[in-house]
Length: 146
Image (tube, rainbow, N blue to C red; front, side, top):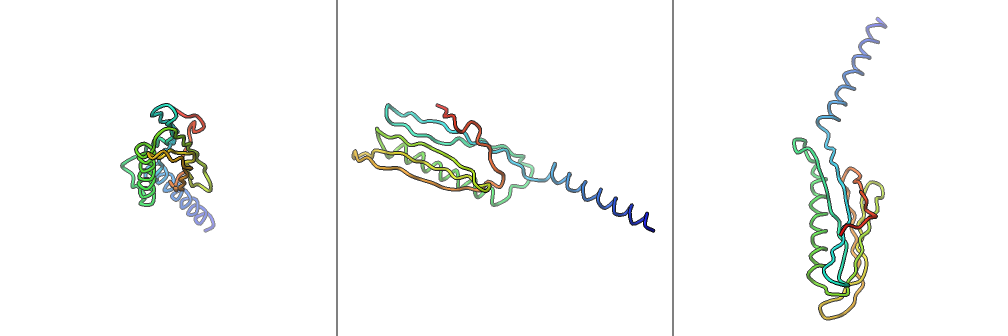
């Protein structure tokens, strides 16, 4: 009797382990997310940094709604800042981008100075935090690409 219970428990553990491995390898959403910084040089004394999002995931697996929502929010926020810095200011403008990972969330900070089209020099500060479910890789984020 004890042997049958032992075999049944071993069988149950093997089935549960198999289910976990199948889920992890074939069903789980595991995106590869990489952020890189690049510098936009419009003219002398008019430059700013922006983030380049590189992402890959298996499109056959279901994408969690929170991930998709955060991805859209990040892209809209990032594009709004890029458009703002590109179209609304003039030289001299210098805005730097930094990022920090805290408790699995990524906080992006744009900080520097801008010059309005009317010639007024202003401090520039924008910050937002995004949760991509999986902690992204900040590949060479300390290096700025031109």
